[in-house]
Length: 477
Image (tube, rainbow, N blue to C red; front, side, top):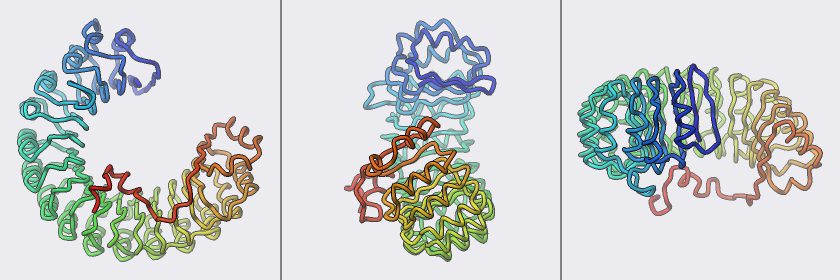
């Protein structure tokens, strides 16, 4: 797919892009962003024939261009004077199975003094590539090495010591790095504003104390699926500008550490506590009391969460997205508090909240007029609640699977009442039971139906979190 942006406008072309059409694109005088992600019709031979260059180009995305090596890249960016960002994720300089970042590839970027952002996600980083990146003269501010095979403490440490002005670093799923890397990152790049390090499984809990002690400008931290504990959270609470904190599947944290974050990080907008099972109402109360700017929180599959947490979060008037999937302790009483207090709510996931029924839908219909997306699968909602929900004029996306109290007539009435619907997920058993005239009418007005034939799941989340975080069952204790 090719995306083109110039003069603030963005255009997409679904056709197969080749060097012939690319020549025409490069003639655009004000072209700034060019996304050639997955354009397999482009290769080195074709790019070598280009007779146009684009001096205004600022961002180039060649992700998943498996037929382009450093030779083609050099041809494409030749003559570019304003290049600031290059994305080569999941590309191929050797083969589709082993995309490698080599010195030849990096040397193509040496001439671009304004280059600030380099994204190499999913590539195998060689030692020659590391040394070449370290020698770049451009002021690199953003470096993304997510899922880069071969990245070790030695390579990462050498790299960050050469780019001490880094503001954003992504080392997600770099499973070979340890305390050593975090020590050198936090000591060298003290101006970091974003650190993403999900599933860095060899990094010990002691390393997270260094982050808070040395990176006081941090605004985003993704520590999902890591060994961080309360001492690490207490240290990170020194980062008063923190706005995004992701702590999903962090079994070592508790209310004690979260309370310190809540009392010290008042600018928090996004908090993810998915499956952080030691967190209870007390920790959420600290977030509700101390983070008035909160816009998104995920507390899914935490069995210690009750309605008291929702009452606490109802103080966050800016809350837009709430995920409480699988929280068995919440009910319609807590949802009432959210509906009354959080009128900016646009996304709500209450799947497998079995104690939420029609009494929770009625206040949503009355107070949550900004709601656009809801998942109420497995809840105790009947026709009455769904029809009430359908009165929300902005509702666009609904997932409605395994509602025992839902009938074909109630579903049909709700669908007809939802004038803004664009996407609905339903169980396939309803398909022959709904009037075809209703389905045809909805589809003609832009609604897409997704029919699912999933059996009723007795487990709360059967292997779902393993798949979500890209871990095989053999990796999970």
